[in-house]
Image (cartoon, rainbow, N blue to C red):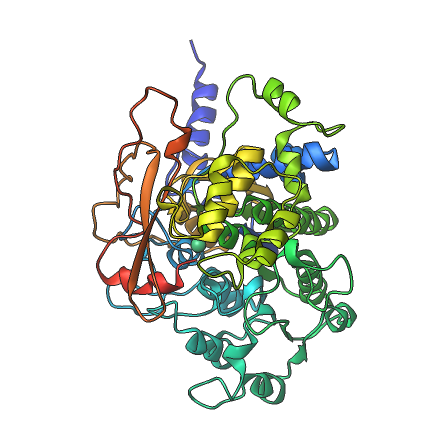
Length: 539
Ligand SMILES: [Zn+2]
């Protein structure tokens, strides 16, 4: 029997405690928010990079070896309001505004295309936080734009640059995309670089060396006309362009100078997605390793300010349907077929590739010249060319229907046959992606989440208790339909002028003998309707 005094105490607890819905929940608020994302990095990309790191570098990734152990982990769904498969615009917008919107839209209402306030704009308006966007893609690309611009079409890159200058003004803007800022390239004839400097007091830099010297203030750094050079294509030293980690490091230094009220920094490593679209496992792995370095750099900042910092590292979607297909007994097969000393894993052969597929196939026509053929053989001299690939090289592209009619898919299969790293396609997939978090409020980013949960939780951690996501109509609002993995699917790509060009990337030759070949179920990269016109920019 409980004594009356205890009853009173329990009653008091019930009134004041967490069970009382009227009691305000104490929510810790981060002062420094660092949001890092690797475009196109699904669980499989992360795992292949981890296996590469273990085999070639002899250590685990920072993400899996340290952050996953010390912080929180989650799987995150990525679908958009009009498609089971998101693009980067809707994907990053879900984090930035906490709502599902359509593919191709950036931080706008999906129906009326009115601007929706982003988390970084909210921090700036309410708390006078500094903000920063960093990417090795164009800074006007969909992922960074989702935090600092509002447009109905992600292809409106000149308008995105204008909004950075005239409206959102992030204190730190680092990446590529210089041509979107230049008078000679812009339809309105403005030189936005001049306007940033003359009207708003920014310093403008164009090289890693100049960036390294900056300590504080407002900075616009544009290091390439378009996208920065892939890691795999960079010279060992003497590069003018900074790496993603160097840009993240500079942004953290500049944003945290002179005790600011706080900051929100978004960092994108974009190559994993671009490599996935090219079915280029070697370029993808180096991108994930670079992302891992950038996250480790952000973690060092967190360690200096553990009670004030929230660090999130995730991806917007998976690209290409990567899998590492080896099968039982591969160790024996590899040993028999391979004479190299000290090889611990077939994935370590990716380290022998020193150019992206895009670079390797640049300028190749229908038929290879003797010189081009010799150059390709030299580039991939560590790999064995099987008879199918030899035939493909002999006959030229367009004759390899099952592999697709592109040299890049032929080279991707060469890499895949030698390493086990196969791409099932070259479009975004609907699979859930990994998320890691550490610091203030990190425990709220665990379990199986939706990408809008990230945005909504960020708003709540920022003190906006009234934040409620407004549901949008559409069949995908409750949960995305399950899709069984097919062995073959067709992707459709649009060219810049809107003409559609279809191709099939089929891995049928891997089907075990006697088994019916893959179902020909078609999985479209995106639904038809309004979003399809943005496909030319899909990233
Ligand atoms: Zn993409």
